[in-house]
Image (cartoon, rainbow, N blue to C red; front, top):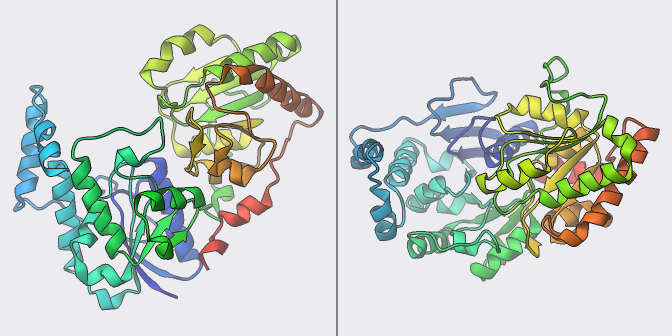
Length: 409
């Protein structure tokens, strides 16, 4: 049993996929007997978590508190101070304020009371990491979780871009790699990718994949009311999650329509459903492809409902970037493995998803028009299997074990 102090920005399970993944990690650390205390910034989240958690308040004595307030006020008039601040300092006023909040909270903790301090990232924010980097008394116990490349230019194409303050952000991460005891990654490919930007750190590598919460399958979803657009008796091909700019859905939609035209009887009960919102630039072309059998639900859906739909779907879809390489383990993969329905993967063959799913799931990149015929035939094959057995299964206990807390022992 180890005593672990966790720094994380949010503990809201309806927050980003990164937060969901870190909460699953916290639950599984507790499940196998570790003692965990969590410090977070999410004062607005009022539900009592199942673990020891303390929200860190804002300090009105902080200069950055008032600068953040001023920045928020001026935004109402179209003035964005961070437009000038970030290129000069590398980070926003709110970043500096939040780092100070974590640092002050750490002064009330004693390093000798813990075996590990784990810093967790959220989206493109690594504020807990910055706080511990500036608190050297914690360095010899520091496990830094890196869930995505950083800075943004370190992303593989097409995600990469030179953001304001890239040089300062790079210097910050050089410090993280130099001072942390362990660098934790959710995938093997991401570890290798990041070590190409921050070399000579292979000895610090620790891969902890996105976790399955062991009681995820027992979450009470059966009593939830299904959204009106979802009929569980249909052949439902479901994509749950935002359709980012780099994840176009058009080839999938065209393939689905081709499947319907080649197999007309499926028009009676086959549906392709998108929930979670789409990049604004996708919406016009999506509207041209939508028909009675393709649904785009653009409004927010709570995680419990999403997970219920994933369990009731006939097939779940994973769309990754239209690129040659994807080192990311999608955050929803653990949920789909527990949902135990076939997974239709659209993404590069060189990806962490493909490394886990294996052959038979490679359908090229999502914007490759040459994939339409292959994909249409794949959907028809799944539909025919569904006609014979309405309860199709993924049946991948090996992946479930890999994503479970057994890997944390």
